[in-house]
Length: 593
Image (tube, rainbow, N blue to C red):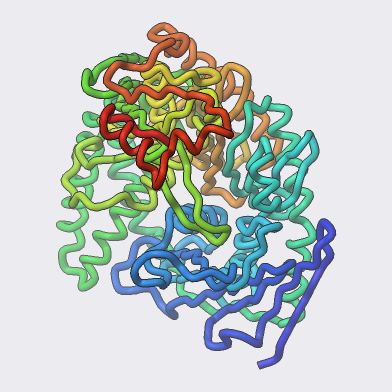
């Protein structure tokens, strides 16, 4: 197998991609280098979809090897085991912009692995990992409508920094990860120190310019390697049967779709679907492929529901629950609902409800974690729980999945920028969000309940934080409609899920997830403008319950007093072998640190 290599100069660094040398039995393999960073991105795909497969089984796994930073893992086993939280998060971030670029009806299993073999403290890996993943697909024979590329943007002292290192990220007031194609943005994730819409859009435009040379690099390598994509069997609809299903079920689905209440609407849609399936099972009872036909009819019904939801928007300018495109669902807030907790709040928006609970701790409660940069601690945690009863389902209860980790991290970023400095408020803060019911945008409900709960607990945050999920629907003519505060059905059938959180002053967190191959800066500008109106409406509703943080923390929270000791007399306080300071702790029950 021939070796092909291409390199560019990007932001003062050499970036290279190479194929044909390592991992040659993979269907696509790229060795990606920049600075001391070395990534291996590999992809393999089954030749055919499994029998009865009706979705695209793509698995993306990003993993870091501790030897990449010259370190041995901590713990008893001294080896890499299950993925850490940040690895799970980046796996999701790579998956999101890549998934829409596979052909419709392609259901063969695909596994994409990105492994960090060497790291560099001065270079953020996230954007390069996205680019490496795209490059592996580009030089494989797997059908893929790329390339895309990624970049991480920070801002230090008012100047943008491309792929900032560990030290620069600590000083940055922006942490923006962007993926994009030649003419469009395909994914956004990150947080900011209360950015205005204009600051946000300027950063996005800057980021999009930074990926262009990486797109050229991938295209050049694929062209040089003369990649030929494999012939694949796409599962396309039987147009004759689909037309029959449409005639039988379309108007019934239109009527069922207009119920404003989620459970009632779901029951009515199910009744139409069951009736349709029974009708065609009877009609085609003699067919040998009846089981497959039933699966296909379920898919056609799903497509019809997709059409019905969109038609309401473009023909009647209203949504399934009767709202106008920019209308927010009814909001209610409660605080101090759990007397034993240090702070608690329930935030309800429509049929989405989050119970936010705050616990205050001391330095001894810091969370310890380990990355390639070394061991560290954090004094703020947010954990998001999504029990099955929140959507009326029965499921096995296990540990947090990728979705729960991702939603929790988004809310964490939204709130961390308003936390006081540790010197001013020397407490560890843990927020737990229990989703009590869900009909879309539960992560943004978590932001709202978490903000209220911190204020109720006396955490002197820089300002109340609210969050909103924005959606978009498009039609065949290119028209689009931006939707505020999307419900579950609009997330499911829509083209965009754009979550924006922030204070009265500006944006603190954002996440863009698309089912399209990309959207323009102009559409993002429109969505951000509409989101700002929605966010401020939600903030106004929250302020009716609690406007500023309480001045005192609860009596049942740890009481911390800070004292200054003359450095020359610290030895007297500690005593020989720590005898005096231990005695003080034993007599008073206080922790001294």
